[in-house]
Image (cartoon, rainbow, N blue to C red; front, top):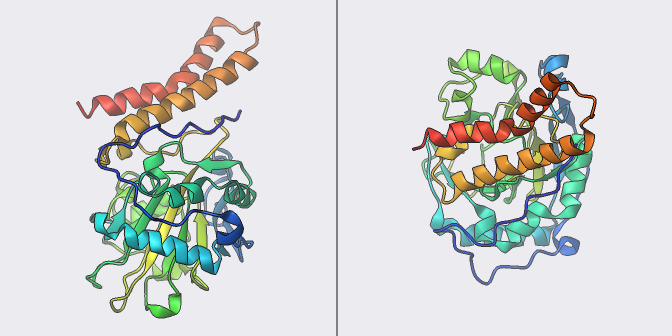
Length: 328
C-alpha cells in the first residue's frame, strides 16, 4: 500500500526566508551518483527477524557513496555559507540550520530530485520519498567553534531514513568522524542509562569503542545512508578548529503498511509551523491508509474485523491528537 508525496506547502511558515542569488539545482551538472562501497544490515546490528519484518528496509547503514560532482559540492557549500547567519545551537547538535528546504530552492530540489530518490530506494530496497514534513527534509550541520564539543553526540534520529553528506575535503580537518554503534538502539540505551526517547537527545556517555565503526568520507560530495531511527550514530569532535559542513536530507518510506518512524517529540522542537506540519503528515498517512482500505476491504468482513481495520487506518490521526493536546 503506497501513497503519493504530500504536496509542498504553498507558503513558508513565519520566520523562514528564502536566500537570494543562489545557484539553480541542475542534476546533470550537480549529481555524480556512485554505488555504496559497503552495506550493513539491521541483522548485523543484532535486530531480530521479527523486528526487521516490521521495518520497511533491512538496511542499517550504507556507504560511503558519491552524491555530488565537484560543481555540485561548490554550489551546495555556497548555499550552506549563505545560511550561516541563521544557525542555531542545541545540547546534541552543536551548530545547525533547520528547515533548509524553506530557506533554499537549491536544497529543496536536491532533496526531492527523482534521480536521488530512485538511487536511495535501490540502496534501501524500498521506495523512498522526501519526508512529508518539509522541516525534516533537510538540516545543515556545522562544526562548533568550541572543539571540546562533539559535532553531534550519540543519538538515533526522529525519522526513518536520511543520509549525511559532507561538503568539505576531509583532508582539511582532523576528527569529525561519522561513527555508528554495531548494536541495537535498545542495547545502546541500556549502556548509556537512558531510554528510546532519551536516545534522540544529547547523550554525554560513550559506547564501547570495540563496537563502534567509523566510516571515513573519501572526499567532499560523499555521503553515508542510514535507517537513522534504528542506528545509533554520532559525529566526533574536531581536533582543531576547521570548517566541516554536512547536509542531512530526510526521507520516508512510501509503503504505508509500516509504522511511522517520525517521533512525536518533533512537535516540541519549536520550529515555525512544525506542529501543523506534523498534523498534515499524520492526516496524509491516514488518508493513504483509508484509501487503501476502501479499495481492498472485503464486503464479507465481520463487524469486529471492520472496526479493527478502521482503527488501524485512523491510528496516526489519533496519535497526532494525543501528541498535540499535550502542547495545549
